[in-house]
Image (cartoon, rainbow, N blue to C red; front, side, top):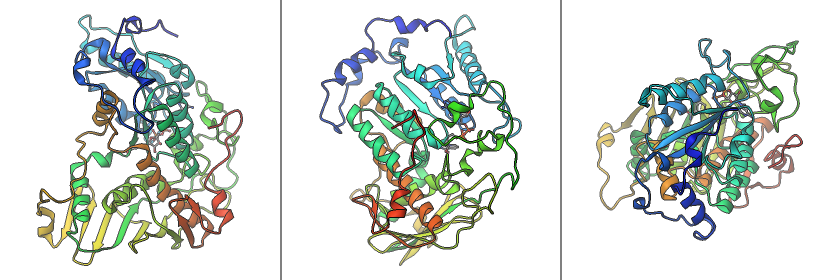
Length: 454
Ligand SMILES: NC(=O)c1ccc[n+]([C@@H]2O[C@H](COP(=O)([O-])OP(=O)(O)OC[C@H]3O[C@@H](n4cnc5c(N)ncnc54)[C@H](O)[C@@H]3O)[C@@H](O)[C@H]2O)c1
């Protein structure tokens, strides 16, 4: 462990000020405002101190997206993997040491001396949470860790940017909501399409009736591989990889490289497959466009999803295919289809589609139609990370707060459950329970392996 960074010894700072307000500020759930004039701009002592927890595939995006802001300082990185290949692409060398190096190199370029050694690297995120100079954490862990790490961080007084899908189960999301509100924390769900102007425009066109009455929505996700086949053999745990801590609350299981780095998303013990992976984006856009952020569909039905044959290491849907119905009759079909990502809204008077970064519409003129002053304008966030940091300062709600991330993840989880049970399920979005189906209700939560508990 390195020496504590210099700035952990500073006198009264923005952090102290926020802490001081924390106890007295506002009723539970009410955003509270701290005037920007209280802080000294981007003065080093007033930077938001951030720790990156999880330095794998997505840290290639999240870390530079945080480092670019001068009013934010990355003070710690954490990963159970010291550093290795074996992520999404063979050439990616990732883990805590490469991440620490990236951070130090970044700040070294800006330091007058040309050198910097102020970022600490940790194996156990609880050591990060114990630091009182950390204001916020970026949780970029496999999904089975999201709720637990986020709730522990919030209990320790940290704000949280939590990668999508926000949760592994519906129950995880319910607990995260309680923690955000009880501890008055800022939580941004890492579904960054909420901060894309083109996506916002597509949603505004739908919301403002440009395609008439919405009838059908198509949400596209990619297919998934099946992984090692029957007879696959356990492998030795690589040096520098804390496998027990990687598993954490998930069931004990023999180590295999295809189980962990990046590929965890194809195993139900850690994730929900492509339904929750890419569906956390496409179904998030659906929820935004339909104005159903506080609720969700009332019915879910398998339409012929395909699952890996017995004995494969991966066990998530190879081909996603389910239908959900909202209370107003709108039908959502979420399925595997080329190009693997996109959303299409079909209405009585036309359609709007967002795919491959582009908005297309029928009639074509619809794409240019202006949204009038008295129509619905959705909240604007030009950058998902910036929006989070702005909210850490202002204590306003971010563009995708916990309740919204939870409901989007729920659409994915419930569709997944219907695909597994292969029967039509009726859902009560208020009670967040399936109607008359005990087996399905049991799948709304997964037991945590001791000693971990939410
Ligand atoms: N927003 C997006 O577009 C986007 C894109 C890709 C991934 N993601 C999300 O990011 C998350 C991570 O995905 P990934 O592709 O980076 O996976 P990954 O496996 O490549 O990286 C996860 C890292 O977390 C580490 N880790 C696991 N358990 C840990 C623990 N207890 N403490 C510390 N480190 C631990 C692993 O060693 C690994 O390095 C997932 O939830 C995924 O859905 C989001």
